[in-house]
Length: 143
Image 1 (cartoon, rainbow, N blue to C red):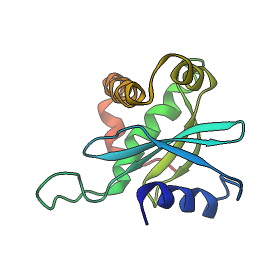
Image 2 (image 1 turned 135 degrees about the horizontal axis):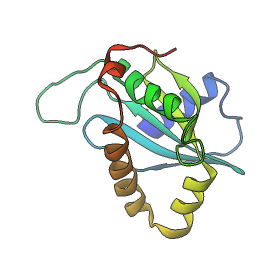
Image 3 (image 1 turned 135 degrees about the vertical axis):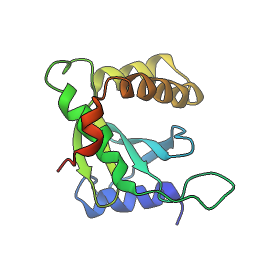
Image 4 (image 1 turned 30 degrees about the vertical axis):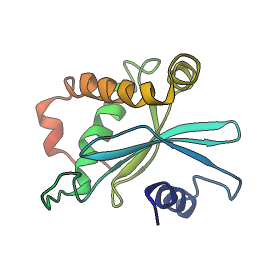
């Protein structure tokens, strides 16, 4: 099964998608993760999934639970920066993925950026946000 079909299956198993037609667009992700824009009717969101086997020549593996730190950041910033930070509306720590929704971000991506540029945008956005994670968050687990 390809990564997009895996994500669709996970989302349906967790009740996040109806059996209706769904479009998944890869937004890059790089070495550590996969990022997809998910569109089902008017419902549009982004899914980020940590990779257990990193995309490098060697056989490097990592715990998908590392997404807990990034998830904790989004949850922490949801209060003070609610209008600027995408909202986590679903998180599956066992499978190492979460879904983000932001009408402002989705509108920006759809209106102003090509699909190729959207992947670059998410990488830069994520990099900037990671600077704001307090060092203690890396030792916490989020549920």
